[in-house]
Image (cartoon, rainbow, N blue to C red; front, side, top):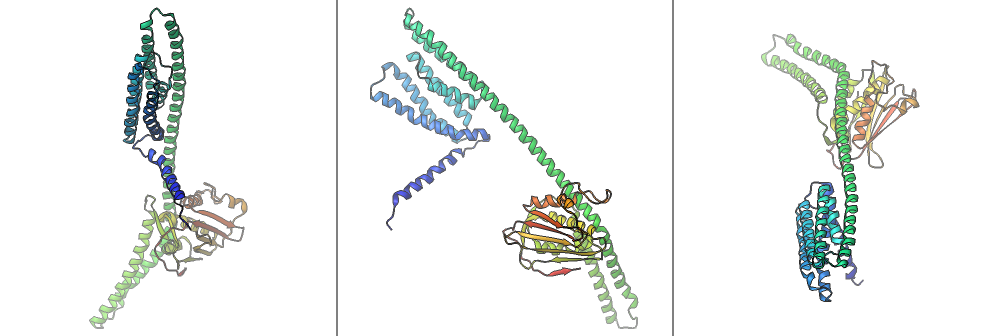
Length: 469
């Protein structure tokens, strides 16, 4: 098929043109409003710098100008060329300095024009100077430029009257033009003044609201962090009885192994006695390591720590959390916790993940006062999300309770038995990680919580096995 260079050239040109607005906005300015105005002002200055000299060249080429216009033409061209300097200053981040230079140049050119030719009919440049000074530099600059423009007009009126002091036509012309110019400038200045004042008041109120919202968000985050730490301490307290039971077993093992020294046959040779004592000490060491691991896990969980997102594998995290889950339930509850065969990566704060599952486990424990089964399953759903399912065969709940289960301070327990914040915290932790949590339950049919979290790009490898207690 023959090549078509023209469409490719047009597409390339269109692509380059689409980049121009972004390039114009890439200026080193701190104020958001100045950054928004910078692009428009750059286009304006480039436009004036090119078109004003071309316009005067066209008038000169056709011989449409009288000799007395030459000083004004020179001053106007200089002001137009200074527009390129103003554009360069904006590119360097000096927007207000560029506007001040532009206003000064325009007022200077107008002064030369009025001083050499009298009153000018075309007021476009003067009006543009007034508008830009007011919108960018503020109300003080607006009224300053207004007064300076009135002075420039008075210069023009004086120039028109001096050679014709007794000329009635000149006096009439001045009497007509001066009030017209004054009223035009005054009306435009008043409108701009009120518009600028209203705009700046609105911006100030908006900034104040933004600052208040930011403070409220910080306070909310601080309160949420405190609530999470309180929930962690509450969960740690619930684990204390199970930990005490485990430590009782560990200390019993250590005492039993230590008692082996009394059962060593004094008549045996030194090697046999040393081997028996070594085995007893090895048993003491293993029991001590088990106790140290248990306390280390508990202390790490309870320690206040700032939230830190990380990529974790759900299967491995559940396996590491299994000992603490066992402590949540009594001996009459059977707990099934999986480890992942396939990697199930999620992005979440690890301590928030542990707290959410421990709170759900605590809720299941309270629903099974006579014992039962608590099971956790984890896998990948059809849409690629990571799904964690927690089931118990407790007494369940009705539809009215199920609809309100995640509301803060809602609880079906006695007043002294709970705060009603556990499941609300779980909901907050899951949603802050970009996930969802749903509950299915019916009276007498147990409860199922289903957590869905986005799959993270990467995670450490994991191996799956079934852990049951």
